[in-house]
Length: 95
Image: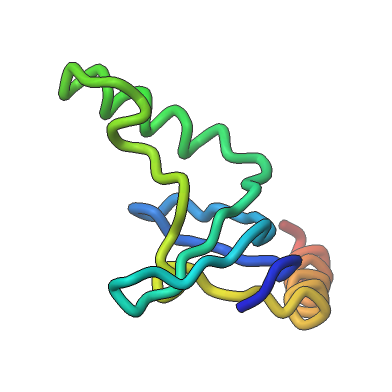
């Protein structure tokens, strides 16, 4: 993974989409990525509920860096083709 890669994460069935801004290799032998997330309202709401439930601060639960095995790179051209095919199929069957 490298800076500029589009990535996604599945956080408790919330799909999050972002772009890697920075990658760091740490002493624990793992690489970690800082990510700019887009359209992340659902995740932010989940974190707010978690904060309220546990009585803590948002910063206690939201991550600033993600271990690279917890995120996946998106093949954008492939995803666009697949979504286009899905939309076309749905239109054909009247959805």
